[in-house]
Length: 334
Image (cartoon, rainbow, N blue to C red; front, side):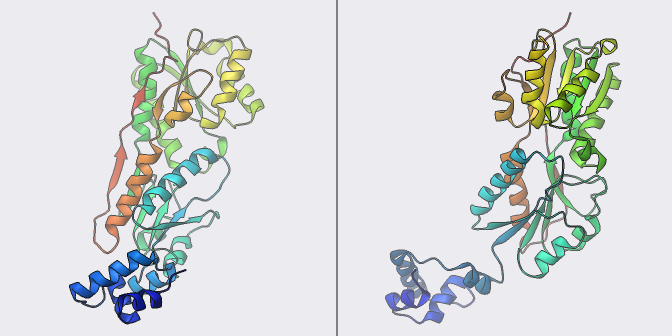
């Protein structure tokens, strides 16, 4: 591994001069700066993280808070982690993943110990107990999600309420009069997760506005739970013709169980879902869906954090509008 002393020797300068070129803390003549940079490039020198931190008073790390709680869909969560890490690397930042179900105080602990320069928070609850602390953290904080009380906070998310409205409207516009939402696992609703509550409110509001009969059913990902959920949803008295699925983890089991019951999609039952595009595309029946724009949300959260490092920005909420792709899994009823 090339050291700063070797760079200094190659450039014919002192180690402190190389340090000043790297940190920008002192004015160095243009000729000397270029000579040092040529030596850095020629030797392939990379300053270690500790040296960078001492030089810049920054850790070059973003803290990503993702408490691993029941009901989370880990493949989608890891897509978010990957998207955020990729966006952070474009800014020469690494990501510190914080997965403990820590209460208020975690973000302050991480920033106060200089473990991270900024914090991105996921799995946000409608009445999130971390809100007072996050307002007080002396570092940029961006939430992927939106608590009910978001004054003074910066949030990036999909507009889940609009997505719920769009999903219900899509079925209503195709003549469906009785529809059902197969929702997230019960634990997600029990702890008041913001995105699930907002989508449910949008779905129910749009169904009521259109005079549709609508019901909502939390569903665990286990196959027997999917069977019980469909038994309830498809009870003869309900006459349900369209399903909205907000639970990526059950899609495969749900389509398999419908086939076992000799119910064809969309001929016998229409299905529309909210999930990443590749998840909808790769089912046994490609599903019409509203996309969860993982890459866009991850990049947007990182951009919001980076713009706040060393600069004052007022809090803001950015909600991406839902995008629906029709893959033919919903039928028009006469």
